[in-house]
Length: 187
Image (cartoon, rainbow, N blue to C red; front, side, top):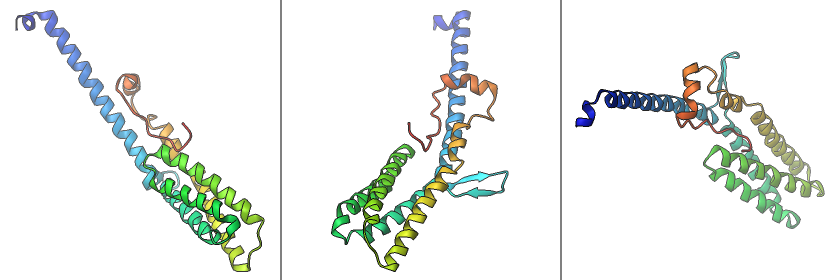
């Protein structure tokens, strides 16, 4: 207790506590802001200038999985496409079970590759009018969903999540243990 009676020590302890509390509060606020941006991955990005909410990347990933599964079901009955169809099924399962945004990005890339490989096999085959039409519909939806993902403003929001914060918050960010929002892009 004698130590706390020393004025210099008391001031030092007070300064340390104020700095620590400030860093904690700034870190907590910026981490909350980052998590709010990550919610846009699942719920969509509100486009203020256009007045509507853009469909989420999560929604479009679901479209891609559905189209890929339908394509795999159609193709798995053909012996020459069985391996590629199973690989596409596997890629669908991996994407469906991915938890983080980064995992979903990697799984989506693998799904894309598996779809392309099965499509290459299908291009060498002859189909009836209905099957040909179904394949065209699945591919249109599959690639259309990817185009929508590429047009999403989510990554922009993730990159610029700190644009409206104060100079003070920007200054303290490196010391406040802030985890920026995950981007839907390669690491």
